[in-house]
Image (cartoon, rainbow, N blue to C red; front, side):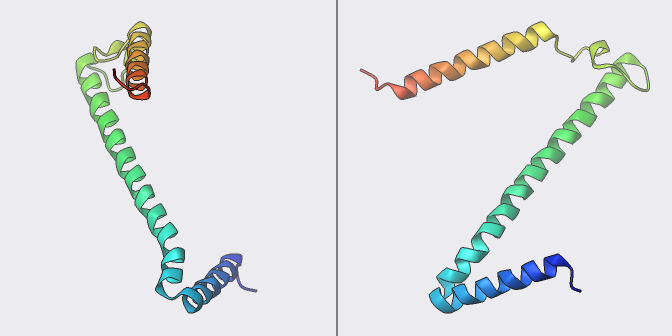
Length: 109
């Protein structure tokens, strides 16, 4: 018995053929565009994730150098932000977003 994904791929191939026969290249494009766009968005997501992981590794190396240990808690590192500064940063970002929404929502007079 064939694995289930072979059956699904066969049905998708049949749907592509029917779309191509009925609508030509537009029908083919209608089936090809969503997987291509999904691939594009996943590639962007993975690239950004890799950048973030590299940045965290770099910060961890710097933190370990500052503390002189093989592994450091974030609180022992100078670059670590306190809970209070994170809260104030969050509040300032929310205030900025509110100002932007208020300015863009109402026409200027």
